[in-house]
Every structure is written in structure tokens, then in C-alpha cells.
Amino acid sequence: MNVIEVLELTKRYKKGVIAVDSASFTVEQGAAFGLLGPIGSGKSSIIHMLLNFTKPTAGSIKLFDRDIATDFHEVQSKIGYVPERPGFYGNFSAEKNLRIFANLYGVPGEYDERIAKLFILAGLEGKETDRVHAYSLGDRKRLGIAAAMLNEPELLILDEPSAGLDPQGRRDVLALIHELNVHDVALFLATNNVKSIAEICEVVALMKSGRVASPITTKSFIDNIRGTGLQLEADLANMNERVLQAIKSVKGVRSIQCERLKINVDNIPNINEDVNYVITRAGGRLRSLRESPSLEEAYVRMMGEESVE
Image (cartoon, rainbow, N blue to C red; front, side):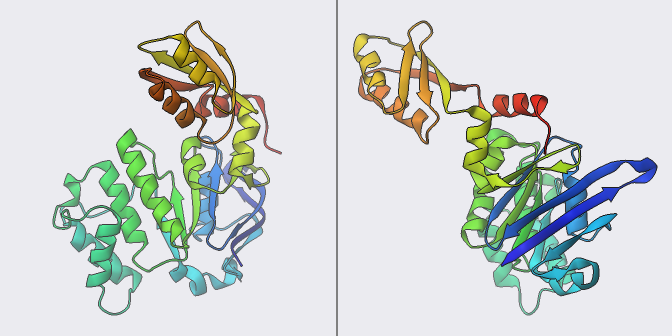
């Protein structure tokens, strides 16, 4: 079953501004779907229409086979939403905030045990009684995910979940989102961060200037923007013939440029880890290893060169 079916969805604002232009896509039950595009491309407008915050100018949306124009109340309890910056009562404890949200969502029965489990799931155990204004942005985002999971939704909609986070906070939040998807919660993730899409989503649709491209697998998308090969730039503390021969033996390594040690490789899974492993086994010491172009560089280049069809 599809949890989301969007057909020819269009949103025009005042003065004829088109935020979303005839978008069509589906999201299957239990899938992780990424909507990837730059700021201002129309992603938030699509989210607001999915949540029935605003009405489409044209087109239709079905959630769980229900047309939300008439039956949104029938499916609302199956949906969780995490905005870019979740809002809480800062002077209240995190636990009190979740209790307030549980009451607002009409969570049935005793929910103490559910709240306790959500603190564990979100990695916030021990911080239940802390006031939210003392939380870091990463902790607020994880608390936002916990709040969105209070009603045990089948579909979780996330708007820029990793925006503004440091690398560790980003990893923590993405790990939590991945864990939710493992438990068959369908994800709709809207972001401008291509690495978040690569780590979380099985399917991605590119959005640019209101237009949404046909969804494809994330692997196909990455292969398309990077091509079949990439270059690893290695910084070795000790270079010798033994290390070079070990690198050449790695499956996927095409050639090596010894000046600044640039390694041309096939774009295949775990190639970085494989190269790092053999360097270490051969007695080499790796100071750094970066992909060129990086995934972000390839994405930015592609967005500057191509339009969405």
C-alpha cells in the first residue's frame, strides 16, 4: 500500500508565484523517501499540503488511500511531523513537554511507559527532568522526533532534520531516524543535505524551482551525479612501495598518481574502507582520505548544470 500518493500537485501563491508545479510521486508503506532540493525549491510547501496546513491550488493528495481534501481527520492520527526547529515550552522539563503533547494528540490510556521508552529511543535518558531551554539543538531535534512518535505513527514527515547540527549531532539524529525506519515507520524526509539522503533514504526525488523529478533509487541517483568513478586523495605519513602495491591490489582501484597520492577508483560501496584497511595492513599510516569530488560537490555541480524534468 502507498502511504502517500501525490498527483499533479500545484501550489500558487499571491502574485502568481508557483511554489510547486505539477508534482507527482508515491511513497510505499515502510519506505524511506527523500525529497532533495535547495532552499526555496518548494519542499516545505509540499510538506504543508501533506499536513493539510494549506490547500493545493490544483492536484490531489492521498494518505493511506484517503483523499485528504475530505478525509484528513481519518488519517491524521497515523502521521507524525518533525519541523526544522521543533517548538517546546522552554521553561518546562522535557518530560512535562511530552506529557503536554500526549494530551494534545489525544494519546489514549496511560502513557508514562511510552514516554519512558521514547526517551530511551531518542538517546535522552537521564535528561527527562532537564528544562528544554538547556537542551542543545541536537537534543531538541531528538525530543521533537520523540514527540512526533507519541501517537505511534505509520508515517513520519521530517523537514530538514539535520539542519544546523554539528557532525556528531547530525550522526545521532540520522541514526535515530534510521532506527525508526527499521521498525517499519515510513519516512518522508525533505532536505537540502545530500548526505542525509544517501544515509537514510532508499528512494529520492530531486526538486528544483517547484518541479519534482521522477523518483529513482538513491543508489542510481548517486551513480548519476558521480559517474562510475571517483578519486580518493590520501595523505600518508609514510609512503613506500609495499603500501603502493597493497593499494593497487584493492578491487576497484583503477590507477594511482603518486604525486600527492591520488587514487582513481570505481564508485563502489565501501571502497574507502577497503583502501584504508590495506594501507594500515601494509604498515602505512593514513592521516586523511577524502573523496574527490565529494558527494556534496558533485550534487552542487549537478544542480547548477541541470534542470528538473
